[in-house]
Image 1: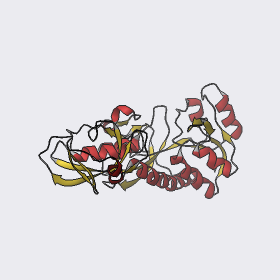
Image 2: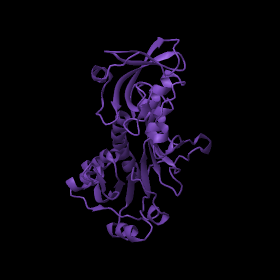
Image 3: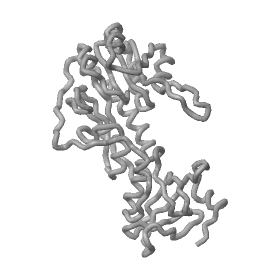
Image 4: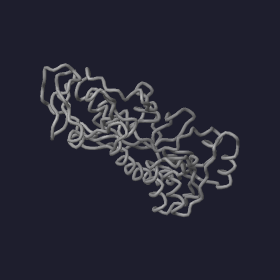
Length: 306
């Protein structure tokens, strides 16, 4: 099938690679403009752009989608189908309506749950035990189109957002191939989303970072997992200075200490009392200006006085 692909981050790369490997004619790739990164502020290509160029696929990086330029580029490419995976921009109706077989989106949640920018993170933040990938027909409203197919996967209770991101990216690529075949054969389904079941997954911000130790150990553990690697859960309970919490463990051990109190600190990590009386163990952390490290290694250079 003749396809235009739209995507930006690493999540979208497996989907693009699967289309190319399957022999589909990916005639063009749209990705967000390169952005300066690191200390040198050098412009770096997006992961999708890198993948496309490695396969010799033309790349387009419009700064706007509503001035007619992108539409003209798409008309020149003349795709039968547009596939979108974490592109990061809302497509205007004139682009949505152009391809004969429509536009489809690879979304990292079980829609209608978690429409929006950060579905992987919010599934973990809310303590969900299951998530998945949905491929849907795109509509005018964000993530509101009819569902074509879904794949489900359990969330490990210690899995963080970064790890789950990679797993869902791979599942999305596999699901996409099946859906494209169905679209080509005219057998793809249209399952309307139940508006009663809709939940949202808004963009993350540093306002979510501070840990409230009056919450349960499991809730704080989910916060650490869900905000990894950015913006990261933070606390000043250990030393008085704010630091990032990178990996934690719900010990199951109980304490009568006040929530936020460091109960013990040693080779196993740093144990802190939570609001439900359960101890949460800090396994990895990152102090200001330092690299991420094991809590035990941090303690060797920064012993805690109690």
